[in-house]
Image (cartoon, rainbow, N blue to C red; front, side):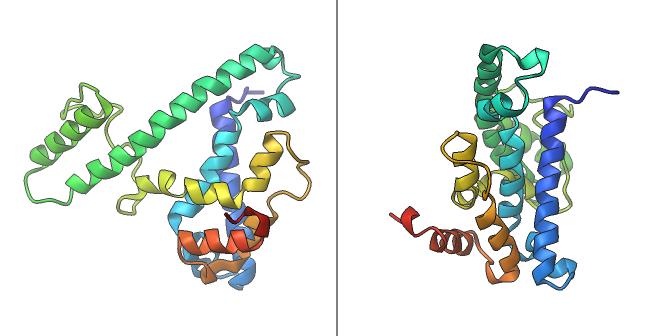
Length: 215
């Protein structure tokens, strides 16, 4: 069997997060794609939710619970080191995502394609401190085209809301509560579908289910 990498496992869990959204949202929408939670609620929440689970694969708590019996992860120092490295990488990735969104905006301004790519390269040089070359499709370029304008920013904008919705999951990963019963708030959010159209709607609804969480 082909071994699976942690990165690949994270992608699988990311897409499973979307699957949960589609299934539970469609329960409310009568099976209509346009009414399930992915399409009825902000894309920033959909991607934020999925990427939060993708990130959890690299948390020390996840590795301690699920990977410690695998020889490559048996040393707790190795698991802790991986978690620290991935935290730093995720901070960089979050910044890169926002920079890519800003780069994409340049494509909608007047001017030649060469001018637009030069402007994108300048944005990368200024914000990511890389020697971006406009004639090369290197890592600073927008490599993932989702077919929706400025989609990249969705991978970062919804993180704060997701932390509210998935507070019980993060507590369980930190060892502060059992995993049983987690995700209940998220499932109720998905089932609410189009009733929750903004990130604020989602946060307020989630907090209403957790009275003790309000400041």
